[in-house]
Image 1: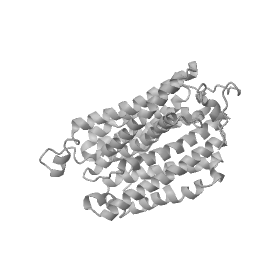
Image 2: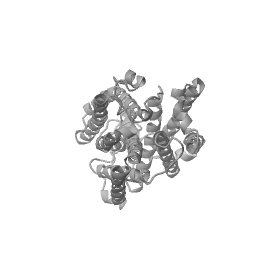
Image 3: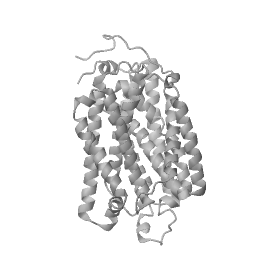
Image 4: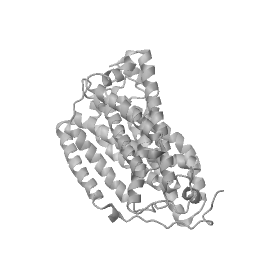
Length: 399
């Protein structure tokens, strides 16, 4: 039988004390300073390498924050109870999306290095002539703005309504968030798909895959949920999110398992169809990534993103043990790191793995800045929605 907040003791309102993070914000800020300074040197002196390294870092952290928005939208669209207690951490991640509008901007100064169509004119290439209606500077810039207006706007509206509900407890906020999220699922899917096509598939603008958007989404959803597990565990270790119990971890573990399988299914389907057809303009993507030094990364990705976590996540032994699940979540984040790296950098180094210091500086710069901005969001609202109508169901969750 469902419980209401009137039948259960109301949980104590938790307001985060930023000092509980210790030196973590300072570490984020220090990493950002070192990384941004190193990346600036790369921008000035080694701009082509900087462009690919910066795109890799921005894409990696963007997928984590965009995933936070996906889980927020899914929570409302499905009228879920279980996720109420961890929803604010999803909202906090999603609230960082607008910052990527600024972080991606330096790539416009390097666009001709990244996207081979950028300097082409009509008549230079018959393939470009056929795609000119989509691949042109004006429409590309309009789409760029739209992605952040739509995704950032969704994140802002949903978090704003959620925080306001903490104050007045009105159910109309829940109705608003549910209606917005049903429509928002479509906006999210379209925006993420076209952003992936523009920024990543556009690295080889003659290559195409109809499954590309779904593949990027699969990695986004699985890795962002892993980050939510880590953040939840971090806050619980600092004395917050007290109502979160092992049942919540069990569900998050099951969803991690689901998206581990989904990522593998989409990745295999994309590879198998392209391999079977064996059309040169399609298989070039995998020919580069399955030869020379990149083959080892692809092998690591297949093994580490599916064959290692899959059997582990089948057991309750890990799903109902926060520290164990947290350890696997770090591994999945590392696999997402490898996945994005293998998507971006082979376009610059098609003849094999060629590491650069600017890969590291870009990662530190973007990651440190986003980590510091995230730490600033924690005390701007309660750690979980305190007056959501489904809070009681989340507190009394059983699987």
